[in-house]
Amino acid sequence: YSWSKSAFNPVELLREQGNVKSRWMTTVLNTQANYALENGLRFTGQFEADNKDFRGLDFLPTYAFYDEVTSPTVAKVQNVRTQSIDSRATDLNFDAQMLAEYEKTFGAHAFHLLGGYEQRQTQSDNVFAQRQGAYNNDLQLPGNGDASLQNTGSGAAQVRIVRQFARLNYDLLGRYLFEADLSHDGSSRFGANKKYGTFPSVSAAWRVSQESFFKNHLGFINEMKLRGSWGRLGNDRIP
Image (cartoon, rainbow, N blue to C red; front, top):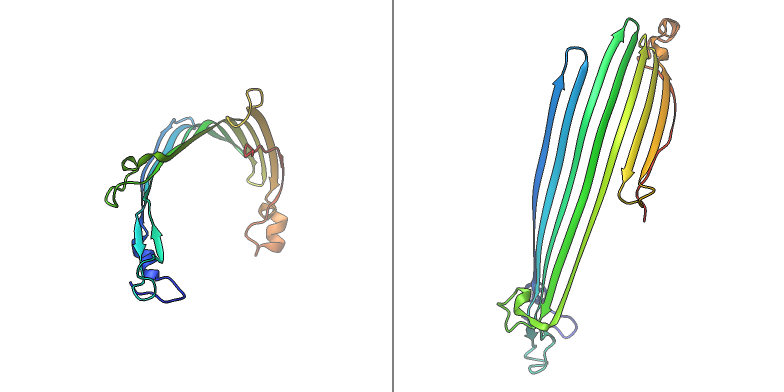
């Protein structure tokens, strides 16, 4: 490689100062089952999962580069000790749901009732090993380095969320709508006595565009709805 008196050779920096190799392998599963009865009752089961496996290898070789014109005996840039880092990680996520629904219409009254259970889980772990001082640049795994020049580390985490929930929808004449929800949620991020919380919500709506007075005077508007709601929400994203 050629040199100038004021700058290092960028080609040398790219080609000779090691390599970083990484690989991700991902597996995804998504399945659903449905069963319906003639009386309007339906059951649904759903399961989703994805698993990611990571492998990374960083290697820094020994090297020394000279400028034969300006400094033939003193390296302009060098590394006297190899360094290898082997990293591995796994990330698993899944979501399982079971639902039961019931729909019924009595004249102008329509009801939709939903109940369910959901469990979500995320778990991850990682580990790395690092060593320096292999005998030559062909020995690129950490196990070939000097045991006195090593570093290791690892970590793991798991979060689980469970929910039991119910929802009632009521429709009168297609114009007057009402909804009530109740959710009982739990998270492993909280302590033993504070894992669960209950979160209700209600809403009501009026489809003004379905009223005869609206159609007679503002028929060019296809849909207009007035809606109000109230509810409580939870958040387990604690520091």
